[in-house]
Image (tube, rainbow, N blue to C red; front, side, top):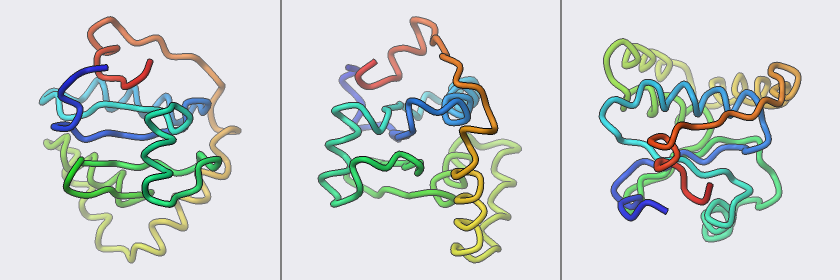
Length: 137
């Protein structure tokens, strides 16, 4: 495991979900500032994160963004913050904050419920450089 994970933004995702893996790959390709690391919710690291916050440890339909010692965000708030951190044109997604959180999360939940139908269960194989950005590969 990379030593400086506490200085990064950690994206927790469902490791068994094709849509989730697609988004991890999408973030990896755009993370020019090397701000993100990744951990599946099913991993020991992911399970520890969930249990320390009294979150469900057997439900994997939510993406979390965690900045150690600062904050963690869930669902649409996590997605919008990731886009903001990526910068450039992705900062325009901040317009999404104009919509109430309950509405944004409702849309997130619809996508989440149908995510297994939206993408094949394909296994993404990160490059050796990208592999360093995963906690507990």
